[in-house]
Image: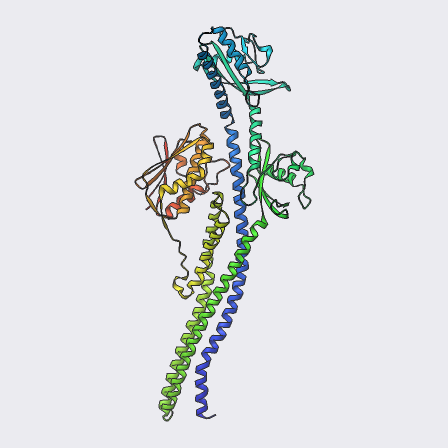
Amino acid sequence: MDRSNQEKYIIKGISFTPFIALFVFLVLTLSLFFIYLQKFKRTETKEYKNTIIELRKEATKTILLSQVNDIDTKIKNLNISIKKHLKERIDEANAIIDRIIKNNPNKSKKEIKEIIKQVLSAIRFNNSRGYYFVYDKSTNISLIHPIKKFVNKNMSNFKDKRGTVIVNLTNSIIKKNNEGYATIYFAKPNSPNKEFKKIIFVRYIPSLNWVIGTGEYIDDALNELKSNLKQEIIKKRYGKNGYFWIQNKEYVIAHPFKPEYINKNIDELYDHKGNKIFKKFAKEAITHKNGTFVTYYWENPINHKIEEKISFVYYIPQLDWIIGTGLYLNDLQNLIDKKIKKTTSNINQFLLSILIIFILISILVSIISYILSKKTKSLFEIYKKDLEHKIDIAIKENLQKDKILQEQSKLAAMGEMIGAIAHQWRQPLNSLALNIQLLVEDYLDKKVDEKYLENFEEKQMEIIKFMSKTIDDFRNFFKIKKEKETFSAKKTIKEVLNLVNAQLKNNNITIEVKGDDFEINGYKNEFQQVILNLINNAKDAILEKNINDGKITIIIENNKIIIEDNGIEISEKIANRIFEPYFTTKDTNGTGIGLYMSKNIIEKMDGKLYLNISNNKKQFIIEGLK
């Protein structure tokens, strides 16, 4: 082979070798990327499905436990409600007596008493259980009573089942404040050998020298409460097809979609796999005092198909109730399918972006190779007559090849960088997981609907698009930005109050926001979580103290937010630990992470959250937010 042909082959080698090498590298890199991303998609889809299921399970559990807490509160406040109701009935009777006296100025006292006796004797309340009883304070003679044998009878020796003389008890009560409560024990006509606890309220009427009273059996009030709760719970709906059912250890008490199951023995009720599912509910709920999940197959009330369902069941000993609610796993499939579709689309876009970049680089390298080959040919022509010059040219060609090798090395390093970017996708995916966790909070706040989910999905896809769009800027590729926003402190707090006002009113708790507003630059959703957590802690403290006039005050002053309540106090010994993770003062319902996470959120926003105790006043203070 002559020198001329050698020169041609050298020039062609310079022109095509980098392109061929780059093409081979491109094919291998894209193949490895495709294999890795397909595996990544399968793994992330599985993790996403598990995460969604766990989040929805926690949401379902939270919904039911909220219902249980509401029931528990109403049971705890039963005695208070009974006493309030009894006093209201006596106030009504007192008003009737005053009105009769005022409207009959010309009648004798004896005639007025007869009118009052006729009117009060006819009054019934509490589904006809409630009535008034009256006796003369001077003679202890019974004047009004629904049982005729007691009317006009001297009650001086009348005793309850425990031997308490009733008139002695009531006289001792009115001696102090003219009115008051007492607890007595009586049998009922259908249970003559059993004593039943009864709360009575009596009041002395000086103008008539009468003692008037009324009462309520605790078990009657509890049964009425159970009846009201049953109707209230069965009517409740949430989400797409969420509902509650009630049963006990023997039969179904209430079910909104299976009326034929009501009062039916649970040994006769099966799921669609042949399991005695209601019996299993009872066994699992009673075994796990904090409630538990049960998986089974049940008919979906929306599409009437048999689907896998996960329910959370909880046993309420005070009512001997098992209450449950659940979620159908197929309801989550649409979310999962959309996730798979979006993930696939973004992976394809990412691969296409990589392909376009490599094509552009290939074109650039080809142009450089072509220019180099033309230049090399020219140099060969110029210096081929002189061997020394040819040696110089060869040296220059070697140097030029070294540069090409350096460029190829840079391309290889770029491939490694792209591989590193794929591994770093975990970080933005963590952001997606955090955003999904916030979905539970918005779901519990009843903000979740179809439009919300579309917006939520669109926002999360923007994060993924962000990853693909930043491929041309490697230095900023790994930065996950979370933008802060400026918002009103008072307005944001009031938005939280809109979520909890009804619950606070149900517990006779008032809440007041006062002071001057200021703006905060930070994370609004997380700030709302902190305020909600502090309000809930205040509510729990008030309920634990068992007071009727609970009050929470939120003071905004000097860029500070102060939250105080008149609930149970916190000792200084405990105060030093309340922000520790997993430390709680609540026996069963506390998790010990609320204040810990709240403190972390405020500190992340460059602020401070701390507890101040002085002059028997407990204050949670947030400051330093700007």
